[in-house]
Structure formats: C-alpha cells, structure tokens
Image 1 (cartoon, helix red, strand yellow):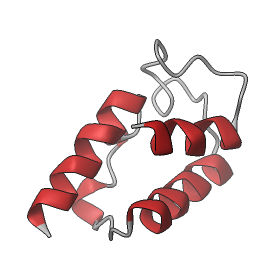
Image 2 (cartoon, rainbow, N blue to C red; image 1 turned 90 degrees about the horizontal axis):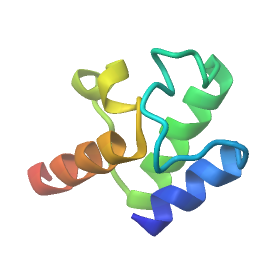
Image 3 (tube, one colour; image 1 turned 60 degrees about the horizontal axis):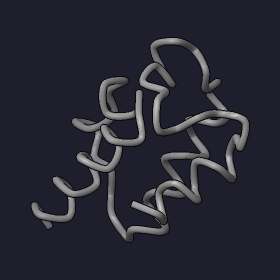
Image 4 (cartoon, one colour; image 1 turned 90 degrees about the vertical axis):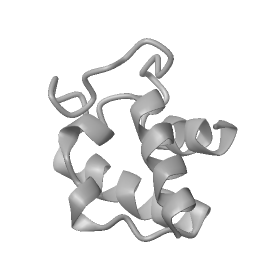
Amino acid sequence: MEELREILEDIDPTIDYDTEDQLIDGKVYDSLKIVTLISEISDVFDIDISPKYLEPVNFNSMSAMWAMIQEILEDE
C-alpha cells in the first residue's frame, strides 16, 4: 500500500489519506487529479482499470483504491 500512498501524496500532499473517505464524492479531487490518479495506478501496478471499476466508491479513499487494486490483480 506504500506505493499507492506515494502516488496519492504526489498528487496532493495536503490530504490525510488515512482518514479521508470522500475524495470523489466530496469533490476533494478534481477531474485532472482523478485522471492522473487512474493513470498512475495503472502504470505503477501494471493493471488495466476497466470501466466497471470507474465508480466513485472505488476512489473515495485509499483503502477503497487498495481493495480495487487487489481485486484487479487477483482477476488477472
């Protein structure tokens, strides 16, 4: 999960990712940050994030993203 934390902190180091659970729904991340996030996760973890995963619930928190990444890795 440290790789994911590094990605998130590179995008916006002012956010407490251990407690924030509304990155998308709370509009903490704008569209540019979301696109950057998806691209970085895909590159770092060498995964394809299919459209079925492109839902706010999967990106609202670091733990939700980590669960999504693990699910994608298990399915590949």
